[in-house]
Length: 174
Image (tube, rainbow, N blue to C red; front, side, top):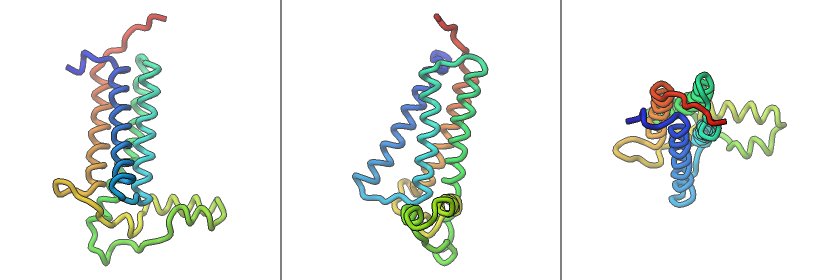
């Protein structure tokens, strides 16, 4: 069934899926009052990056090696997001006394420190996490939101690989 669609169409479907994931995250934040931690924001950036690469691929409609170029970029962004989500799942699995202590927020670091040091500390916060990242805000079917995000990133990676491997490049009219 997937062979009926071109890589351009499948990249467009992937971009739409990423947009829906971001819309759901914004709904949880604005509609349900969940405050995202630094790792959650980094996962959103990774999803936005993967979706942007897929959108550009859908607009461009690459052939041959170009499909792999776009797929590689989207997969790289999704792998980064999966890594961050996996780290957050790990932090949430720790006993409360073993979780890292809560620290300052990224916005506080940005406003109070010199920019070079602020960027370094924010990256550390995103990659290592803190107590806010270890807190489980909500669960669905026994899994916390970062676990669902990790699953979504894994499915996105598999989808992109299938899209690039199972479609044939179409000839351009121009």
